Structure formats: C-alpha cells, structure tokens
Amino acid sequence: MKLQLAILQTAALVVPRQQRAEWLAEWRSELWYVRRASSHCKRGVTAYCLGAFKDAFFLRRTKPRLSVREILRLESPFHCTAFLAALAAVGALSAVQIPSGGNEQSMLMQRPLARLLMLVVFACLILPSTTSLSLGEYPANRDSSWPIRLRRWIFLLTKIGLILLIVYCQLLFLADPGTSGLAANLRIQGLLWGSIYAFRWALSDQRKRCPVCLRLLTNPAQIGQPAHNFLEWSGTELICARGHGLLHVPETPTSWFDTQRWLYLHPSWRDIF
Image 1: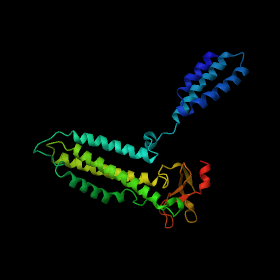
Image 2 (image 1 turned 60 degrees about the vertical axis):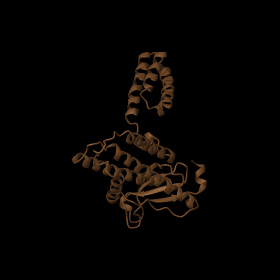
Image 3 (image 1 turned 180 degrees about the horizontal axis):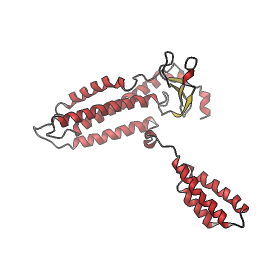
C-alpha cells in the first residue's frame, strides 16, 4: 500500500500545480476500489498505479499556456502601471550611468528631445496601418459617469507617458560616444519600431479592459457564425470578472458592426461573480 501511494505521489509532481490536489485525491479514491477488486493480485494494482504517470504527462502536455499578461500579472491597472514604471525606472538608471564622451557626442546624443519628438511623429503616422485607433463604442450608462471616464483616460495617458519615458531613456542609453553613421541610424530604426509596437500594445491593452474597473476582461467565447453576419453578429465575447459588463468584438467588421461594443450589465448580475 505504501509503495502504491508513493507511486501516485511521485506522478502527482508532474501534474500542473493547480490540478495536483484534485488529481491525487481522485487517483487515491480509485486506488481503493482497484485494491478491493484485485485483492489477490498486487502486481495488477501496482501496474494500475504506474498508469498514473501517463495520465500526469498528458495533463502536463495539454496544460493551457499562460499569456504574457497572466505571467506578469497585469490584470489590474495598478500592476500594469507599476510594471511600466519599473521599466521606466530601470531605463532611467541605465541612462544616468552613460559615460561622458566630452565633445565627441554621438548622433543620438545631439538634441535627444527633438529626436524623441521625431520618433513619436513617425510612430503616430505608421501606427494606424498596424492597428485601429478606435477604442470601441461605450454607451451612456450610470456606470459611465465622467469620473469613471476620466479615470479611464488618465490610465491610458499614464501608459503612454511611461512608454515615452522608456523610449527617451533608451534613446540616451543607446547613445554611446563616438557612434555615428549607419550604427546610429539602425538604433533609431530599432527605437522607432519599438515605439510603434509599444503604442500598439497600449491601445490593444486599453480595448481589452473593463471601462469601469479597468481590469482585463476574461473568458473569451466564440459567438455566432460568419455566414450569419447579415442578420446577427459573430465574433468574440469577453466578460468582466466583477460583473460590470460584456465586450463584443466582431470577427468580420460590417457596415453596422465595425468596431467592438461594450454592454453594461445590471448591478444585480454582480452578485453572481
């Protein structure tokens, strides 16, 4: 009996942590029935326990992969802002420790604010070709009062401001004394495309958040069929974990449903969550 339990406990180490306790309890209960049915064949019971490894490896192999937001815990607006602030702080410390090059300043060190403005202008011109600038449709509701809308815009502007600070620090950090010509141009190009990706992420992150609590929406579900777009919509539905509402994202934009729409839920729904 001890050997068989040891086999199950060893196999449980392969199971993902979130499922481990339930998985082990289920196999222990099944082991009790197997031992009663095979009381005269201990080899059969041991072989049954060894089969737990196959089940454990299957669960490990099919475990859903966490997204970057889930790994970094960026669901809440505070964690998201704190993460960007930490990156900006690291960039600022790196920029402060740049060795002085005297009169031989690199191309990147010449008027850094002007070069930052140039990067932002080019990034804003290219950004619409990579993502939509619209944040979606949010109907008037008692949960959409001006303090809530103002907080939402402050959160977006805070993200953009921290991204600009990070880009500026990187502009200084990459400015090694004596760098000029092709190397400086390549660094400028890298910062430009990095800025475009960062602004694109800020808009995408904002669209995937609840307009009330500013937390990331969860439980995406596929709704409808593309062939039925004439009479009804098809796309992805996401929900606020605190019950504030639903987000409908069309799979194929149409003339009557060309952008995502937010649907506020009645406060009575929040008792379910």
